[in-house]
Image (cartoon, rainbow, N blue to C red; front, side, top):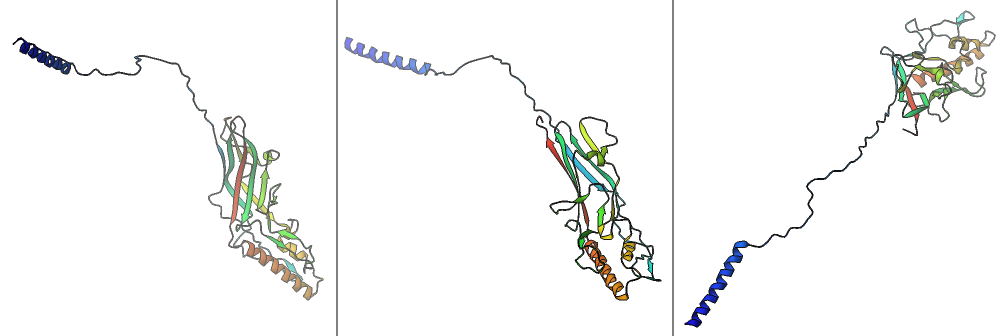
Length: 267
């Protein structure tokens, strides 16, 4: 009996130990770092404001219709007109394009002026010209001549053949531009064209420009010429004037301005 009791208590002891472990459970393993408060001083960086303004504008006046090359004149030679133009006063010559504005502006902090180009092209080409051939009936020099010229100092055909106009640099800027009215600040350079129009003159085809086309041509057909000589010269005149009409009629003159600036090294 004593052996049985001892065995019984042994079994009971194992049973109680098992119950105790089940009640507590497994411990949680914790890893990591803990900080409940902390601070640090840091710098604040702000990007600079860079003014990239570089703006050029040209616009014709609201009522501007374009160039008109004509002549109302009657030139007589030996009691009869050899060459002359009569438009019945329905049109008057107007070789001026009136402008509403032509100006440019740029940020003084960011740029320095380099060049401004005013370019004129007609019919997607340069400036139409006429070449008088050697031995022409009028006895004039065989050369290339212009029909119209921009009546501004320094206007010329560009060397690359892309058009005709002005290249304005710091050396001649004051010739064409002045301070824009109404702007009193110093942040920008703001300039306007000194003239309110682009004015043209008769080209070298008609001499030095002091004569009208009719006066020029009639001066080349003196009364002492024979009828054959007069007719030959008149045919030459007709050919030149017809070529001028073909060069301009139906074409559009494009006026382009482009501004070139040098970025400042510190900008």
